[in-house]
Image 1 (tube, helix red, strand yellow):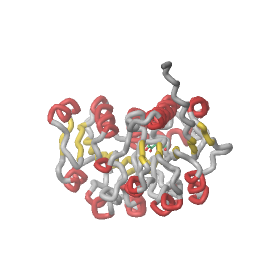
Image 2 (image 1 turned 30 degrees about the horizontal axis):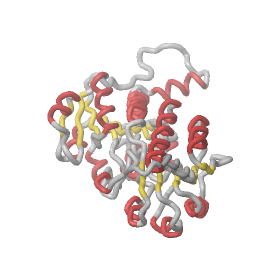
Image 3 (image 1 turned 45 degrees about the horizontal axis):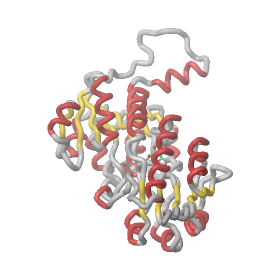
Length: 334
Ligand code: 8YV
């Protein structure tokens, strides 16, 4: 008997919360039944819930908080949350699991760009790049002077990396190339051969590491155990000459405490790409000359966004073919 071709499975309904690069949207539309956005405004929680009610797959970003209460209202249709981004702290992954909703993310493809931005911030703060830029843009430059714009040399400085996952390690490689001495604190110590290849020194005690570093880079995800890990007490351990940079998640630092200490000169400078309350930044931070602020640009490259889109598509496609998405988020990662 001739084999009967399997009836084509109906295409998954995929709802995307933000505008994505055009090529990503086009490819998604070829593969799935996609509800794309006309504009790029952040959605309200009610809008997100109604998207979830009407989709098999939701593609959110870091700006979409997905809570247990919202998942409870989402109904039965949603089966996969394919996050466009590596960090999943905006999604209540445990509640999703309890409801049988899988969560996937895009690890790996944001690593190198975010590490580049970490180094950019370290250099911007220590070498006073915004000060020079402002002077040039205002037409105030009166010519070279032996005593103007003196920053600090990064070579030879001690860099303490908080969180030695993929991005932390990529920061370590770059920092070593700049001649910095690399130190790190991580829940788990790296394997000796990795530590050796990175030339990185492990500190079991975060407090002790903080007290000895010239530069501290936050590269730890936001989880219940890293929330305000750098609180007022720990920030006070840092040298007054030290600089802190954060390209990970704002919630790891107590932003108000940091702002107070920067104002008081108890920490010399900061380079921040992420903030405790999303884009609602402590306004005092904007007034400080020793602070470089960026609007969460760490992974913002054309190449990176395309790769994030590809990962999202692979996760959805694999799921739609009846397999486990390759970048499934599992409880041990939380
Ligand atoms: C992304 C990020 O741009 O991947 C992450 O976790 O923080 C960013 O680099 C953002 O998450 C997109 O949703």
